[in-house]
Amino acid sequence: MKHLTEEEMIEHYYSEDLYKADAEIHLQACRQCSQSYEELGKLLGSVRGPEPLPRSSDYGAQVWQSIQGALQPYQAKQKRSFFQWPQLAYAAACLLFLAGAFLAGRMWEHAHTKPLLATSTPQQTKERVVLFVLDNHLDRSERLLVQLNHAGAEGEQVDLPLRGEAQQLLTDNRLYRQSVAQSNDPLLTAALDHLERVLLEVANSPDELSAADIARIEQEMNTQGLLFQIRVLRTKVSEQKLNAQAIGKGATL
Amino acid sequence: MGNDDYALIRSILAGDKDAYGPLVERHSQSVFRVAFRITEDEADADEVVQETFLRGYRSLENFDARSNFRTWIYRIAMNCALDVLNKRKNQTAVPIAEEYDEGQAAVQLADRAAGPDRLLLSQEIQARRHAAMGKLTPTERIAFVLRHMEDRSTEEIATALGIAPNSAKQAVFRAVQKLRQSLAPLWVKS
Figure 1 (cartoon, rainbow over the protein chains, first blue to last red):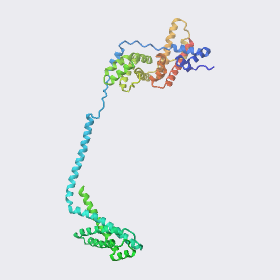
Figure 2 (cartoon, rainbow over the protein chains, first blue to last red):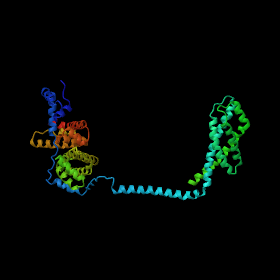
Figure 3 (tube, helix red, strand yellow):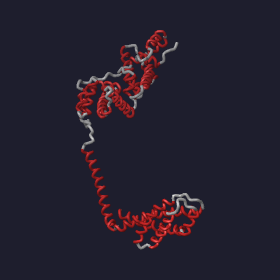
Figure 4 (cartoon, each protein chain N blue to C red):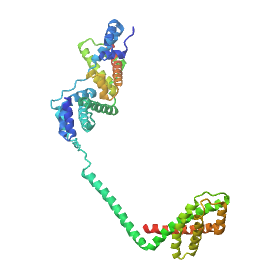
């Protein structure tokens, strides 16, 4: 037979045991547990705290009076709306600041770019455009001459679109040569004149150039020398173009 | 009652401070009763009641609408009572006259047959009960008072003390064991 523990007896005393009926049966059957439980009951039964002194019926009102002054009323929670004036004012201030910054930037830009733009004449602008397209033209021409020289070195039948490319470059070259002829640049004028003759020769050559044809052109036209001239000119034109671009950027700042 | 309490709480939170008055008046007596049983001192119990309702008002925003205000304010009252007991424990020592001495007990309670002796025994029991209660920890004391004198269930004790139900049950067990150890010699002699 398993005796009741002290905890089980205390639980039983306060009617909190899960198996109340089992405990009752055991206490009736077991003299030892019954005696212990009786002692526990006597002990706990003797423990009585002092009875609270009766408070008057208005005790609650007295308590309320004593604490009332120390209490601060709660602030009623207001429904939050985005369109309350502090938020609106903040948003308006942000917008004003952004608009002001934008306008100030515009004014500063105008104030600093007008004098520079005034120094950039239409003639200089035209020169920059000419330099840009001329650089491109010289680049294409250089590539054509390189292809031509390499084809001649390989000594085989050449099946490259040199003729079509030469015809396109020939048209452009005439225009550039005429434009440059008006300026005082004899080196560039001479080089474009030389290039035009080479392009004319290639453009009017048969569809398939033989190695002999190329060798003849190279020799008669001195394409190696022209290539060197073109490279020198390209370097010069590139520098002029960069200078012109730098001036152009400075003018727009 | 519960819904009425909650309606008052909503009014308070909406800015009507005076709505707290009816809540205080409704629950003051019961809070005082339990505070007195725990502290066994009228002034301390009054202090606990006032502090409880002050703290309750300031914490009202945290009140869960699903809770019972009475249970909630009881929990605050238990915390206030704990504070009072802890303060008392730090400030004063247990009076020498109330300390239990088993050797003396046998002498004092050797003869208790006559009527006056019965009265003396009763007074002695109460004095030793008071001393034994003083030896309990604040948690054990509150758990025992709520269980034994206020007839609260373990769950209610656990809620009031903010502890797990098993811890509340153990606190009651420990309190009973300590009381038994302190008071058993009186019963043996009687």
